[in-house]
Image (cartoon, rainbow, N blue to C red; front, side, top):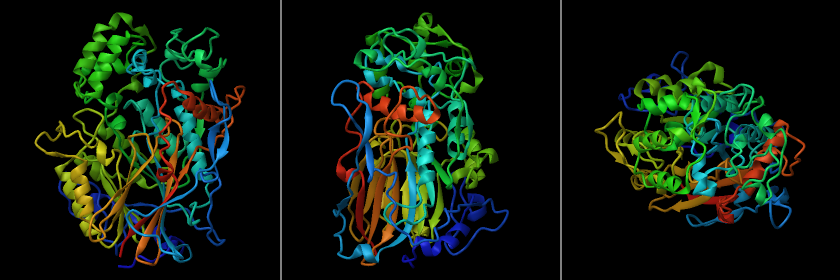
Length: 582
């Protein structure tokens, strides 16, 4: 096989490559995901194809482009105590990691780019007025509710704006091929959130509001001192820590936002918060919880003891189907407050998720279905493979478990499909995407739709990936922290696992990944973190869309109980990851 073409040299050819629906590519079993055509063929019209065009190459010579990345600057506090105001801090240096291959001298002058793309993960777009939220867990765990949650939509739009402003990949300068989301695109499996996510990614006008069309109704104007009350001068838990009084904040938070949409093709991977109500309950068949989601009563406060019991049940997977949660709500029915009902808050199903991606109204820069196809819809699957460039394929796994709980696994059919896909495309480097990390695939609870199918954890997925020399990376999220892990195997079958921090918890990041051939028997994966386009400094008087996005970042830094280690170490951020490959 040839693995020496550069992205710049092959851009025209790449843009003609297609992602094919399973039915139009090769015969599939009923449970298979989307498949690729053989590498040497292209899709014909009517084959269910969707064309993935990379951004056109610049006419000028390719050059590194670090403006707007964390190599150039990172948000950092300007004061040393109390509520921290953010400003421009120094960038993060690139770290060369040689656990899997030694760096050869002169490789920078020899290398050619094979692929470049962006990873979004854990956007957690939130309908914060939804009746089925767990804000009241804050009475036991202060970080169970975060003061910035009402601003997830303008924050995500600002991240889209950052990607659109990148003129090329940070190290090679080559054109970016696509954006991949690795799950938890929504927060509470609500139709409102799914619509907002599709418009953030593909472009459109978004009103991040539900219930009363004119007013916010939720914990932040409840008068409860447990939560930051931005529009009130009354003292509350967070104002005592220095959070500001911001008149007009809630009106601005539910105001219309406009997303330009990504100017790159984008692909989608599902996370547990996309698949399960509250990210943990396999409760789609529960009529009480479905009705409560769209109804007019919202629980906003419970005792610390009751909050601890509910949180412990979630953490220890004692209530995967949500029956205990249903009983909890019934027991606290008299404490609920009235809110405006809204049918758009209903939980969405896997089929709803796929149909939203296949909807032409949300095609944006493509491809049709954003990786998913009608074959996925027919088979009830959410995994697929796609062509990245001449020498690279992408594989998107579905690691969510419909049986409940927030950790993941995959079924036997998907595991066999993964092995088969890697074998069939052994002459192409493979980048695997999923929501869960290898260490968080520990939930092997049966899928209610396939009760007889065995589920497989992270160790078994690692075993399959380690059996194929063409695997170079497993890219995922879920843990909200930057972690880069080497997986060593014999015979050139080593690869890197790249886990990226979320865009909901500080430092609110996404990651650019470049794959290059060093022409010396090694390849390099370059990882470069990026922040949203909003300025690091905030202005309390600026409640514009951009001002809110900046405030989103600063509030997240100051969120009580926030984990300050989510950026990871220097070796988990901006890196060069070397691999020995033939």
